Length: 473
Image (cartoon, rainbow, N blue to C red):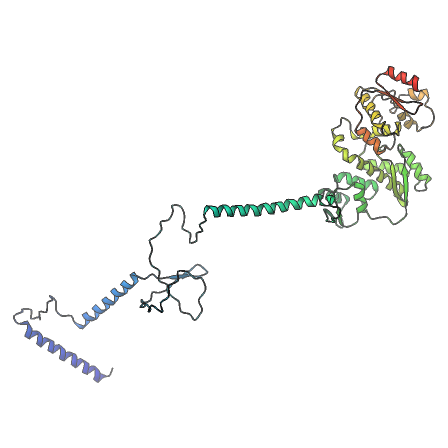
């Protein structure tokens, strides 16, 4: 504002104030205060009073608007609250342009150029909070039928899942045995470089391919294969015989093979002579191989622990490979009957001795369980067994008639003069004789003899036995 304009405005104000004073003097009359009576007890407001009054009314109007409008804020991703300042009320739109306010809360991020909008929310009566529980912004309510249906669906899904797990486990154990066309691998063992025979045996036992790691290790040592295990991944269709597992793990010899037949009852010396005559070993090689295998396996003796039968051996190491194959075959023949053997009163070594005696007493399968029953009956009464085959084994004479002095000699193998079993087996039993020793016949016979009629005759008493001797000898 220029100086001239300011002086003009001030002059106008002084002129108006002088007019007001003149008007007051005329209207006051006898009023001692000399004031104009216009219905107020106070003097008329000045310009400052009017300005203050206007500002007061603006503040009251603003407070009134805040009392009917709620400030709406937004919650950002980090959890902070941004309040939106209130805006003046907007007059309602015309009926044809007014839109129904939205009741949903959008969490979408507004565009950078868009202005924030204010949503007016009418006040509601606050809901009382449950004691001890904090109010949750989200709440899902389900009816009882809906809840039951949901539980049923979850139970069905879990049941199907568990059934699939069980089915998969059972399939992995028995699937291949019941479905020969299926080639799924059931048991897998990895032989890594540097693994010892014991480590490999333990891995096979854990994979349930073999029953005993210790027994399998002894088989490897007896075969001379403990250091010939081949590195690789081996898959089996289930539990296997020790010999079959060893054959799968051992590096095959490159050379010729020969088939060898070991007759029932053959002794270690007989087998040794057979290999020598076939040009497969030197004299004594098989006896040494059998004794070494027995020592490595912790057996109390060697004779009798080798099953008779037909075998294929390597020409380059016939004695050792044959001893290992025969011993493994005997263990495989006993394995299905271990439950019965473990519950018997006798040791397994005793059963081996009995089986070897049965094998030397008869070659007929139907007679073997009966003779086994007589042996057990006599052992129960502590009677001498009276089996001359034990003396023949001691003398290594299976052809010539026994002399009286031989039958009267007090030796560990003379079962006419001593009670109990001989100290070792007396030959290689067959599978039938071995099973007869495990499952003897139950009867009350104590004597038997083979007559000139090529039949066996049993007796309960010694008197009956003497009658059989007179009749059939």
